[in-house]
Image (cartoon, rainbow, N blue to C red; front, side, top):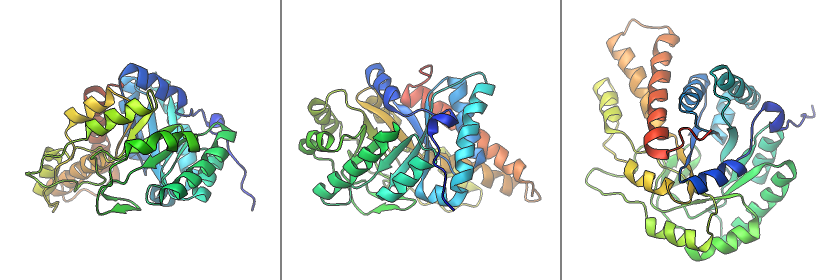
Length: 324
């Protein structure tokens, strides 16, 4: 059966172009929060509505498969109505995180996404340029914004897995942006995917010098940071105290992310911290109330914990509160 194309505008969503311009000039970053289910989405919208922050709802290829693409579309449409119901009609973007093919990006655009990422960072440079350009040319016909990537992040998140970093080369960014026409660029400057980013005793630093050089070469251009979870130690401790077995790990310091957000970084992706917050809350309920079997009684606290974490990130790390 032929699938009917859906415009994101009919769902009440927006693309990221104007949001990024405001963020770059305003010295803050927009939260890009991944979601796979209803509770995660509720937490994101409640946190952003209460703080009056714009938000980018991120969906990975795996999340789309897990939740069902049709349900996701209606969840995003529902998120717009929910924010209005809460008294804060905030700008909401529905974004494909780490799209790995033209076909996937095309399918997402036709099913109501307002923004897509095409990640060709693992390809040889010219192939990355060609693939990114192809996605941009298709997406821009529908006023959908496109994020590209240069450089490779270490770590594991859903389908994305790399053993080591490859820092973004500042001398490539001008050429890449000019040839592809992308609306934003994800770069690799020391952040890392997943919860197990760095070992205790290490001192992970964002390469702000590379960021500064990139800013000089493409002034005012929207930059994106992936793998920006900080792995809060209190959450890891709670998980392990209530039956979990997470190994020791640390993330990127929130002070460094705040510095990045004040520069040209206008979108910061946070996923693993949210997973930790929800898991800690669920494990606590299961451990303290082993007789509990009502999903609302453990997913509810997980949702509330996620909301609090995301409000903290918006106010203290990203600076996007009051910017809706």
